[in-house]
Image 1 (spheres, one colour):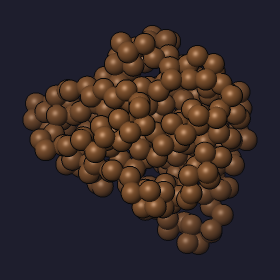
Image 2: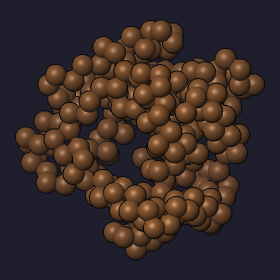
Image 3: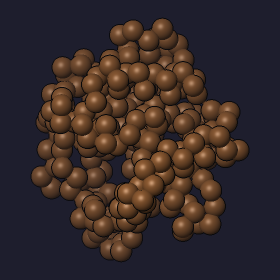
Length: 245
């Protein structure tokens, strides 16, 4: 995927759901993975020509795993002239040494989001951008159907009433395959995920299942995505949703 294509898909989602307004200061959650780095590229590029003016603040929540080097991310942010903050935590230690979680993903996500949101507020941001792409939406629908018995996916925009932050997801129209192509084409400085359970989660299982279903029906992912965008699930028809954080 070329840079202009990334700009086009991201801008379309922003326009469709009114994700950015004049004067927004947006915290970009940077994990060091391909998705969040692609989001940083997209928002940095849009800053230059999008009619509504906004600021960016990159934030990484460091989970405390030994040897996790974020120098390449810091270098990229310096090149883009985007302020970068690393939030040091003991989340990894809490999950695997203190609590010894066998299924740590849910608690890890909650702790990471809490640390990210607090940092965003402290840094004067009113919005937080997550790097969820189209495949994430599809996999969330399947996870909800299989394990919760409901038809649900996170909306493009969510207002967190306790913190006053608004979460936006500008990459919901971007396929993961295109993100991978973008990472390779532009040589993104990806930092390997040090999590001990990376690749062994329910989401990874659903990702593999989705790929098998696509082999039988190439339109499967597009059809499922259309089902959520045309549904009455909160946030997808109106472009906004409120929840506690």
